[in-house]
Amino acid sequence: MPEERAASAQSGVGPPRPLRRNIGLSVSVHVLVEEETFSPFQFEGECQEISRSGALIAIRDLTKEAYVKMIQHPRYVRAVCQLPETEQPVTLFGKLVGFDFKEEGGSSMCRLAMAFEPMKEEVVRALDRFLVSRQAAGAGG
Image (cartoon, rainbow, N blue to C red; front, side, top):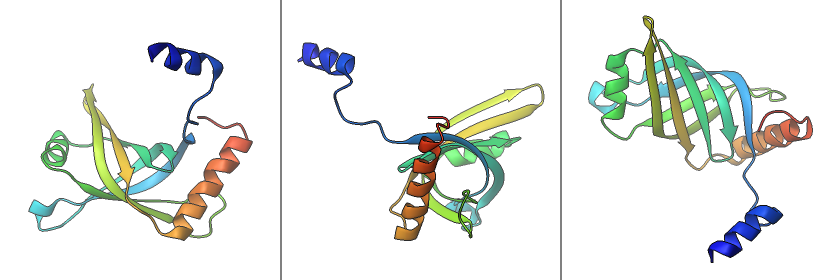
């Protein structure tokens, strides 16, 4: 069995990797915090990577208190960004599934890993168009 996996990896045969693109788009992030009477934490950040199943978002100067509050329970998140070639901003819903928080020199940086929930068909189409266009242009990945 390990020999088959090794041969598959060497030959390039196997399931295709999902499209994941490095993008650097501005994003507005709203994290639902139920114990704060459903008042979401709101941040501006940068969507660093995106795929059909999720996104990686960087937030600068996130307070340690907000970070600690977010990691205490599973959190739902809404991210709004303007994909190139779309007329309206795209709203993505999902769950936070990972955090990478770093403090250095009086500032902080937190990368949030977001797994998407099922999306509206028009959002899926817009995201697919974006991913394919970036692949055709040879951008990131």
